[in-house]
Image (cartoon, rainbow, N blue to C red; front, side, top):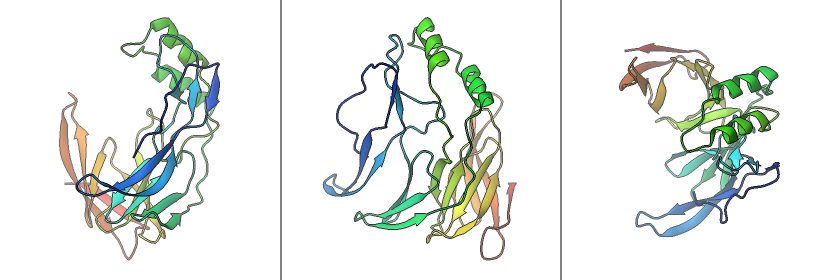
Length: 234
């Protein structure tokens, strides 16, 4: 992706739309070929608080849009939108995957939990300024629909359902190459998925000391789709 020009300035407390990034295609030699699409990042808060970085994303934001490339196409999902766009490498929009998903509103409990989870002052920020930032930042009305996008070796698109950092477990919505809904898959807790094959899921876990190790999980695709999926750790 090519970033937008300009920067983020200190402001008077307004929430501003996210900047538009350009998704471009390049040759193996690094030469520009064509523009594929334009995508928009998450909204930012022009807080005007000296002592913390300007133009911070709102809580629960994705930041940059979700992307997953495979072969001659790339899938894109933005923020709170439930649709997933599939673009061909020549810039043609070939499919839009849509799923009727119940939106999750940001509750008072979610706001409280977010403030608790972000109460520790990050390195490089002033303590008083950070405390004010956490106290005053506005929240979006709803959470994003997805957190990650992956394309498996069979060409199916996997979209991980968004959940706050304090909630355990992970669930993925699965579509075939044409955008047909195949099912919902629950994956083992604390497993960061790296690759999905025909009958396996490869990912990382961490032990009690935080050391990462590779895990191979068996993926059982029953019948012609994924209406029912079983996973077990090898």
